[in-house]
Image 1: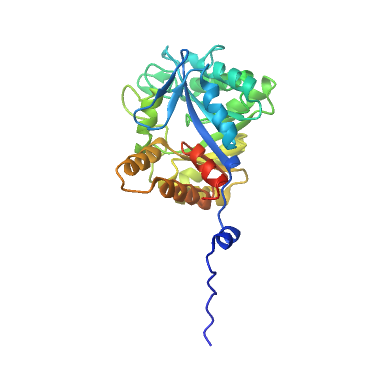
Image 2: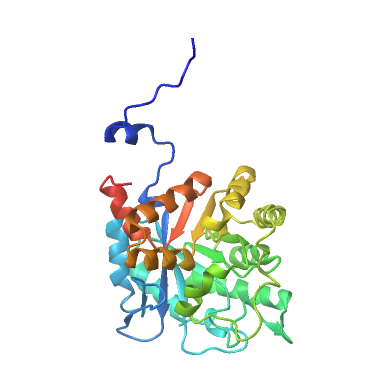
Length: 324
């Protein structure tokens, strides 16, 4: 007698009961671009459906986030003034600091995450202080720590260093603790590759480097063991959560990091992934809902406890309606 596994009759109720990978709106993080000015809600050409908001219009998108039950927002600043050291990143009235104050006042139950990097604020578009045409690691740490403290003071629950400088998690943890923000969490972009999939983001944030590229401090896409070292170093320095970026092209890395991690692991489904699906859907080449849903399930199946995605509002709606 040959024993075969019994196939379940796939009614909708049974499919829902036995599915191995489950998503919830609370595990989703919605990235939001905030630019200086007033009464601004402008479309981002490279990312159809995404907007830049000024601090006074920021509550419009927060209302949708709250209604959807999405867990958190991740904030990126687009300042009007940039300089060599990115001083608007930690300015008391910087664009992110304004947005955090407004958001915290109107939506105290939303989790606010501040991206900590200098590339959006520097005139040269690199992620730190330059020495010639090279980013000078150690002087950059002080400015990143100052930025993290400034965001915590403005109301951030979590700070998310995305710069990939060596030692930045330890520097930020020390600065936060020293300023009395022991409860502010650190979500580290521990594994961030020098990827071609960031193009639409750089248009949205105005953060393309003025010369060269970021391969000297972001990771080589060919390396996996390096990712595991980077992740462990950040945990050892005090990261409460770590993240792999980009998402879909690095499912193997996400799985490897998850298997070895003692802290929650996130994945960032980046702007290039978003825009590719949008472009293909507009041409009728893919079903947008199915493609977005499948991509999200793949990332969670690979190990993501937290999913940062520009599709967060749509995914939350589909989850609530029982379509995912």
